[in-house]
Length: 492
Image (cartoon, rainbow, N blue to C red; front, side, top):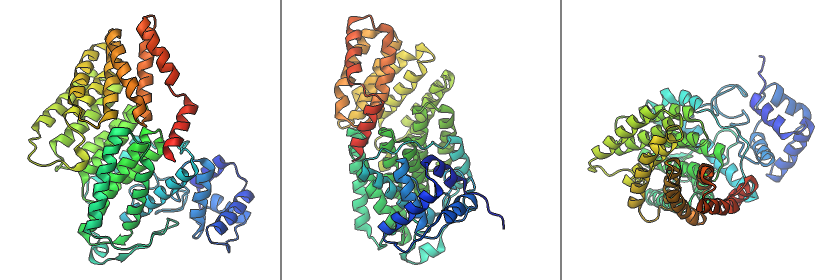
């Protein structure tokens, strides 16, 4: 039977710049270092992997993943190399062959976090991978997310260790009980509060490490009620790992964690959680200037969340959709969508306690997101600037203690809206409040928003106070090299 080339491996091989003979020698050396001195790879084997699509036996896929991760300075998994999952090696699949089966999700989760931690230990900043288009993710997951997970009789009926497929990291699978899961759930809340207060950089490694441990726990077949709770913990940690990665500029890494979170949330039976994870990926796309792809993700997030989604959660989803519409300059859609968000938020009577992952979205966050949407729209229609100011001021009035990063965003939204409304004096005041608080967080997104405001201030550069502010910002604004160093410092 004719084989197809492994295009994924070929692409990464070309990026790495090795010869086939050099890669063969590196595989043998790395395998020996990992406890497999008997491995004897040669040039012809490497050629068959790439040109003929042959899949090497364990431990070669994991050895190759380690080598490519170190060479390229970003996480490369056996999925990325075209070796794991269903289908023929090298055949193009969306995001590693979405959707994954439950046992594949645990394997991908464990392997990806393990590689991410390896980069952390070496102080390497993961970058350079391409983001998958939002339309590709939504297209691959649409039918799957609209259905509940099928009961796995073999998983529910028996307990015991389950082997990880492919070359994924091995874990000494053992059962965990309700008390251990209670502790894991508490750790999620601690990490969530830290992220809201200080940004993603300083605790990202701890979250990734915790997620790696939970991935290993999921390789043991627990009773169904415990297994679902573990999946829920995995979903929450994966969202946090993704959001923290996004916060420090590790965009492809962040996207992978959001996709893992969607899978884990569905396996836990929490489709609204899966929708919220998709909304994080959509926010990332808006941040990167890809609002059309964000809207693709939001359509799936809203339709796939299911009928049990609380009004407050639906309100949050509407605010993200409105931000994407604002980035496209669609003012009519923004006004309509934010109006629906307000109605949904008010309709939530509070008789049902929101899940932990939604408790950060309070009235202050509603106004903060409205301010961001209208401030973004004001780039296309300056008449939206006063609305952005009103909502940003209200958000600041309502912000709870410990939400420092959100307060910085509110200040920057307000300052930017003031510049767009031709009020440089007020803009200067709020810009200085933001600048004074920037050093208290490890969030690169705050610097990104500061740059946006800095560009708007150029119109008023002749004003003495604005000129002085611009000079102060220029002194502290990190350039590309400084940003990379900051990310590296946050990682290790």
